[in-house]
Each structure stands twice: as structure tokens, then as C-alpha cells.
Image 1 (tube, helix red, strand yellow):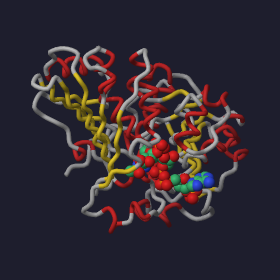
Image 2 (cartoon, rainbow, N blue to C red; image 1 turned 90 degrees about the vertical axis):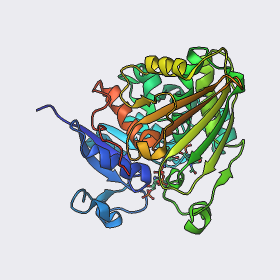
Image 3 (cartoon, protein in one colour; image 1 turned 45 degrees about the vertical axis):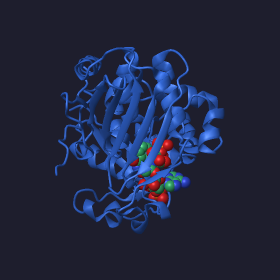
Length: 349
Ligand SMILES: NC(=O)C1=CN([C@@H]2O[C@H](COP(=O)(O)OP(=O)(O)OC[C@H]3O[C@@H](n4cnc5c(N)ncnc54)[C@H](OP(=O)(O)O)[C@@H]3O)[C@@H](O)[C@H]2O)C=CC1
Ligand SMILES: CC(=O)N[C@@H](CCC(=O)OP(=O)(O)O)C(=O)O
């Protein structure tokens, strides 16, 4: 039997890390060799996460780069921004493959990173080495590389919703407005007033308006696709649910395009991509329809009266927006079927 790829998960006690465990446990080509926490070690992960009782009782390890280099092939870093900047270069220098879930290596321009993330950037050579893993768009670039920067949750939904229309010249990139909503798990497991039950329950709340760190990430990719500088208006709102992102996108049409024109263009762009599903005309996706799965569902309404299109893209932020796409990228990196270990139906209702 072929040897399995040995992986470690740093940040395994966070939402992204625990979701990596849920999927990787069933991945036929992977063995989780080490689950790592910077704050708790020597106890079973099931102690802090009783839903893993009898399923995953591995003991949490501390961070030890030399030990990882000796025992594993690849490290997922599901760590906060600012932490990955410090840790990932050490892992790469130790000869490990890395898939980083943070925002620390997504922006190619270190100065721009510092402006939006308010942390010092990683050295340029690491920013240059990182391949941005929006799987459906940059899947070929990811193949065979050693270091992938996994996209942000909002950018994943937004970019998958926009790229085919921009690539086909169907919309004016200068007109794009993105109205994005996220469940609270997008903010991670750390406690803050924002995710306090009494603050979020029965509440809708805009935040980081025109200051969100995903704005430059979305613009960087759209600029690459359009071939000229693209800027967007992007607003994030917290909604009272646990998982899910809906990105509602408005743009001016470049012609008399119908819903069916969009459906055809998107089906063509995403042909052979198992995790993007395009809705029929008159049907728009809901977050529950992708819950706990790696799917991104997209629907349209092209309006000849206003000359604008509304595009809806939904994902589960913890899966397609983080752990699921990271595993899809692992599969692409390793030359495996990109759906390996990810073929679960959404949980419904
Ligand atoms: N939640 C989401 O929907 C998405 C998250 N992301 C990104 O993925 C990363 C992980 O997010 P998420 O799981 O939600 O975050 P959480 O806050 O839930 O978890 C973060 C993890 O990082 C660990 N950690 C904290 N500080 C350090 C440190 N100094 N050194 C090493 N480990 C540390 C924590 O565990 P411990 O104290 O045990 O070490 C914890 O397990 C973040 O960069 C986030 O921005 C990206 C897309 C979507
Ligand atoms: C609901 C919520 O708070 N979401 C977070 C997404 C954080 C995240 O995923 O950050 P990176 O992708 O930059 O790592 C936010 O808006 O900042």
C-alpha cells in the first residue's frame, strides 16, 4: 500500500483546525500525525472538543518546528494573521510543505498587507513563493508547489461569483458593488464582544466598512483577471447564524445579457469543477444549501430594465471558505482528484 501523506495541523483548536480534522480523518491519502496547540499540550483534543470523543483522541502537541520536520510532510497553519507571518517561513525553511489558512501570504505587496492587516509583512521571498489557492481559478498553478496561501472566506464566494462574468466581458468591472454577509464562526473561536450571543442574536451589523482586509485580496485577483486595475465597493455584515456566507454582487451589464447567458457562461467556465454549482434561471442559492459542504452555489438575475445584474454566491465559510478549500488545494498540489475526502452532501435542514 502507498504511504499516506503525514500532516500536522497548527491551530487545531480553532474552527478552521477542527474542520480540517473532520475532513482529513476520512481522507484516504492522509494521516493526521500531529494536532498542535500553542496554548494547551499533553491533553487529548477530545477533552476540549467532546464531539470528537472516541473519534479523535490524539494528544495535542506544542509547536516544535524540528519535530514537525522530522515527522510530517506537510503542515496546515490555521493560525491568526500575524502568527502565520512568523511561523510559516520557519516551516518552509525546514523543508516542509505548507498550506496557510491566514491572510498573511495572500497579498503580493507587503506594504499593502501592512496597510490593511496592521502587521509587519513576511519577507518578500515568502510572499513571492506563496501560490494563491483559489482552486477553481488557479488550480493549475497550485499543482506540484510546496506552499499555498488559502484564500479568505469572503473573497472565495465573491471571486467565484464574479470571475467568469469579468473574464467573458459581460460586466463593467468599474461598477462592482459587493454586499457580503457572514455567520459568526467567520470571526474564529476567540471570544470577543462582537460574537457575544447577546450582541449577535436577532441582530444585523455592518463592520469594517471600506476597511476590510479582504478588499485588497479581491481587487488583486480581479485586476489579474481583467488585465487592468479594478477597485470594488465591498461591505461586510455579520448575521445571526453560525456558518455561511452570502455574497450579493451588483454590476452594470456590458450588453443585453439574460440570466441564461450568465448560466451558460458560468457553466462553461466551471466545467469539470465539482464544487461550483450554477442555479437555473429564477432560482437563487441560500446558505443552508451549502451548509457544512465544500460547494459554492451561484445564481443570477440580469435586469434589462436597470442594465444591471445581481449575482448571488454562497459558501460555508469554514469549509469552502477555509478548511475544505485547503484540502481541495492539497489534492491539487499532490496531483490527486481534487474532490478526494470532500465528497459530502450539505447538511440539510
Ligand atoms: N473561521 C473562518 O471562517 C475562516 C478563517 N480563516 C483564517 O484561518 C485562520 C484560523 O481561523 P479560525 O480557525 O477561525 O480561528 P480561531 O480563532 O478559531 O483559531 C485560531 C487558532 O490559532 C491558534 N493560535 C492562536 N495564537 C497562536 C499563536 N501565537 N501561535 C500558534 N497558534 C496560535 C489557536 O489555538 P491555540 O491557542 O490552541 O494555539 C487557535 O486554535 C485565521 O487566520 C483566519 O483568519 C480564513 C477563512 C475563513
Ligand atoms: C465574520 C467575521 O468576522 N469574519 C472575519 C473573516 C476573517 C478571516 O477569515 O480572515 P482572513 O481571511 O483575513 O484570514 C472578518 O470579517 O474579519
